[in-house]
Length: 289
Image 1 (cartoon, rainbow, N blue to C red):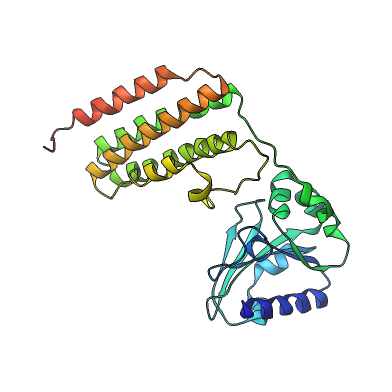
Image 2 (image 1 turned 180 degrees about the vertical axis):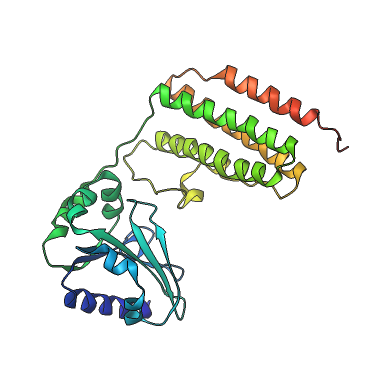
């Protein structure tokens, strides 16, 4: 962590001498008490500035912090910012997230961002008291978002439509499209319900991790175990197997959610799609014995 401490000192000096930079703070594992930084961690910086483009347009400034080996721009998973991700010599990695000054208050007060800040924040620089909004984050409660039946039904129909779509692509011979859909789009819909299921079983207002962070810890052990068999290799038979396994697990989780919320499970969509996928599989011009 000594490299990061040195980078942090340089970040403060840099921010102090650049007039357009108004605030800098650390979030993520370097600021959290739960799941704190380990040897694999990187540093997540949020930089509030009146001129975002100035820092995104060029890369010269990153040399001030070390010897960069890799540098690129990427959208952030939380907040829809643009960040510059840099790996310095020695593998120290820093994500520089730039936030426009006139958007800072609205951005920082959003529930999604407050949820991240509530896990931990380390203010390095604040010229305008922008981070005063952080003072009460220890009491932030993330609302449990239980979907209305219309949203639940839409998600289930979405899944079963794309299960059939995947089978059609397999029959057409578009193996990579089918695999990408099975292990990408269908898995995202499945994980959304796994997260909802986990949230409903957790009776406290515990904050959730974004995306699939620490999935193996918050998802049910049974679900985690079943995930071992629902991803396919790049061959037709493996993708067919992954598709059927994904369908089976999705059905189980979606039905459990329906029972918990007293919703009617869209059985017609399930049965129709399952029959079509099964018929497409059985109707192949060759069968593997």
